[in-house]
Image (tube, rainbow, N blue to C red; front, top):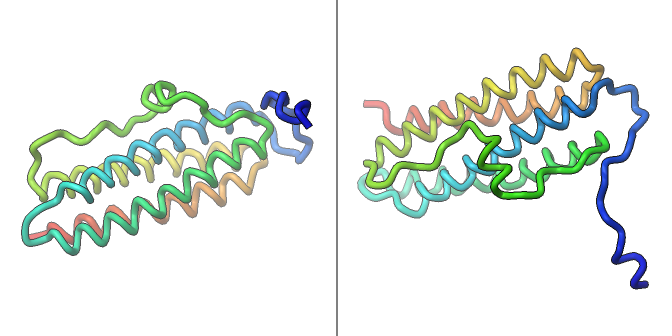
Length: 165
């Protein structure tokens, strides 16, 4: 039984016809990094929002960070399915992400607008992943990227609509 606990995770070749899995795994890891950073940033807004939009924003951000938390698992599992290890260090996540932490002392409007911009940024990154995946015979990753992009585009729209005057 103790032998089973000594197994060290490693990369493993896969034979599904997908080409250049290393490039795909790196791109997925980058999207995973942004997803985790945006999940946290969304929770920061959820925890700290005040004012007349409190309830609407509190409910919306809770739905969004819950969906992104689940998506992080799907992204990491796709990396593993391609035969590579998912990111293992928080500092690696921080380095790879294009999403920055929330600024302190922002108004509700500024927090919501920043989240909308970040969702758009991540949608752009996912659009590029669709092209990357299709060029490497990986319809599964392309489909995952399409689904995730649709989520982020809708999230950006909902956030923008919330603060529209």
